Length: 82
Image 1 (spheres, rainbow, N blue to C red):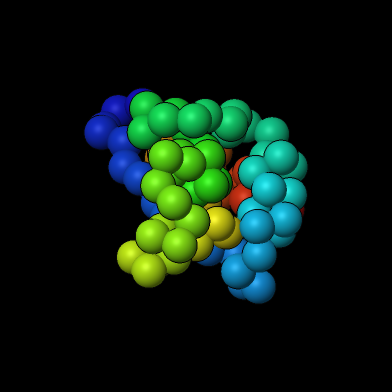
Image 2 (cartoon, one colour; image 1 turned 90 degrees about the vertical axis):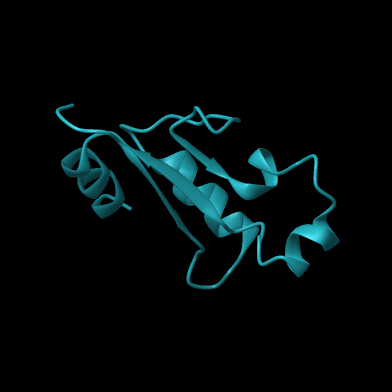
């Protein structure tokens, strides 16, 4: 890595929890993490301490996936294999 990493967040097309879990589980390069210091994680894990109703009111859906970008080429390759 030459530069600072970043964080990318997105929800699944169907906004479904199961779809988000499938994407996260199918990634080969990025591994599941349960904290901001981790590489990938669905919001239901990273924001588990916040009640689901509160998360949804603030726009944090269970299908939200957050990816830490250390190497953009790795990220693109991993998402393409979905």
